[in-house]
Amino acid sequence: MTDTTMTDHGNELPVAIIGAGPIGLATAANLIERGLTPLVFESGDHVGAAIRAWGHIRLFSPWRHNIDPASRRLLEPTGWTEPRFTSLPYGAELAEQYLEPLAAVPAIQAALHLSSTVTAVSRAGMDKTHSRGRDGRPFLVRVATADGTVADHQVRAVIDASGTWAQPNPLGQAGLLAPGEAEAIAAGLITGPLPDVTGAGRARFTGRHVLVIGAGHSAANTLLALGQLAKNEPGTRVSWAVRGSDASRLYGGGDLDGLPARGQLGTRLRGLVEAGHIELHTSFTTTSFTTTGEGLAVTGTTPGGDVTLDVDLLIPATGFRPDLDILREIRLELDPAVEAPRELGPLIDPEFHSCGTVPAHGAKVLAHPEKDFYIAGMKSYGRAPTFLLATGYEQVRSIVAALAGDQEAADQVQLELPETGVCSTDLGGSCDTPTGTGRDGSAVSCCAAPEPVLIGFPTGLVHGRSATTD
Image (cartoon, rainbow, N blue to C red; front, side):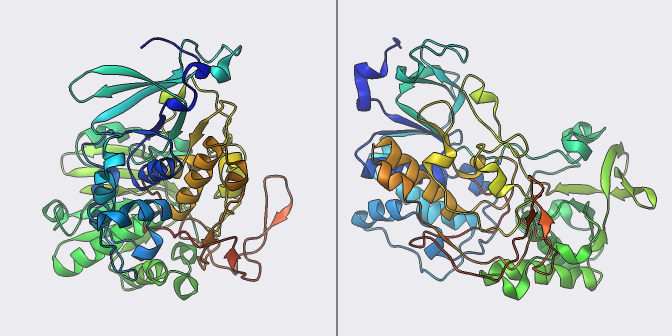
């Protein structure tokens, strides 16, 4: 493809979207509504590919909170029947009853490229080091398809909504793979995140000693399924290891949570632990894995010394991180701690912010030095957990308004979120937690007297995982 400048084509060039999950398709819907042309690249062979991987998990927010407004407006003329507002969908239902019909809308269908993996994003004719005339150059998006074909596409803007599902965090300490971890994964002794414990994968876990490492909603969903399996299948044993020392901080907001189904996760989990169906190991920092003839030996440090747990299988629930390799030629400005856009980082850092009610934000907060490049959706949160679908929908509404030249609409960010009932983004704490210290050393607390987080019209809430797909 011949290099051009933006002045040659202006708004005639499409806007590239990386990822065809809820946030990616919402971006396309907003672009179409604004009269702009989307170009959507999805590495999977279906829309919502990552969601389908955890399709057996029920969301804890009802349908009315999981549908993007622009997408709804695009779907309504097609005769689409919106699911019952108050029901809680499974991930598979979200994909089949919402994303698939949305992808079938002709304007989106024409823009959608499945089995198409973006391998790099740059500026046409120049690498990261060149500045002169940079903003006037189109972006170059390199895409590899399933048949091995590689093609370059020139676009006026890029919105990366590819999520983090493909990049789970290591289980070892210090953000690194523990010795023996890679070998245990290769041997099939460490599963992928959120396996279908009581469904398609039932035989793999029945009668086994299964260890879950990590906290959060992903861990809670997996542990609840394992606890049910242990009740029904003799010989099934469940262990749970976490780095934290205070077990009471693991169970979330309970009845104080604005979404009852989310609050019930922690309440039910506490019951299984207290009844002895799940063996909890606190203050456990994983240091090594040893593959044995009988399974996996997991060693960790504890206040009482090293402890080794002999298990048959391990399920990771330690969260995800963004894949930034494809963006090496893009000028990014990322928060050094959580790898989110720099202005967003302090608002979502789980070490300092913890109530799950992030202020509404849009194009200005998500902007990078690279003009017209944005990271949206779960990937915009970097390594931080508990991303809200509603947050992503508002992000892309604002981004698209900015690309369309409507700066007033881009700046008027609007969002309503519920109280979580906790002061930790990862199923920990309660609003009895003392005030802490922020990044700048000042006193902070997310546990002030509850107030409505109403900044505009409600756009939806979070689904039942701590690290959502896009």
